[in-house]
Image (tube, rainbow, N blue to C red):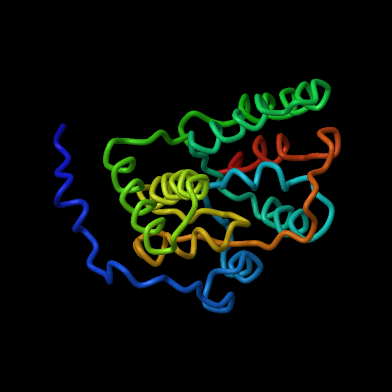
Length: 213
């Protein structure tokens, strides 16, 4: 393997012990403002985007406004793994079947050329970022695993020069402060429950995004 682990651990110089504070929302890329500045938005969808498409309220409004601009939508294999985990871990058989049908349509519509897998450098850098944040923020074990996945998604988007679209502002804020070369755009969730599969529109969103041009 050609990766120099010792060099990668040191590739960012910053205080090794200080807790990182979250920045104010006004200092970050809000989706509403971000959409207005772009004729055709381009982003990598975080896992939560797929589930929020059909919800009532603000997330759906923001994401549907994005769709009207024919965004170029990119995907990460980590998100598909998280979705698959959620389906397999659903105890209610009827709901599990519904979610399976819903997400199977999404997976089928994802274009291969905009679905990104991870290389060894992304894995190692994500581990370093998640580990250092876990130590400095004193995170619990389950939080470390979630942060690792977010770092993998963030670095994948950064490698391809596009931001992550997410409702998870807090984690991505911390990650970006350690790796400012990447970016993210956040929207806020106003309701906690997902729409039922028949109400959700994510398959149409995935199929339409990027069709033109």
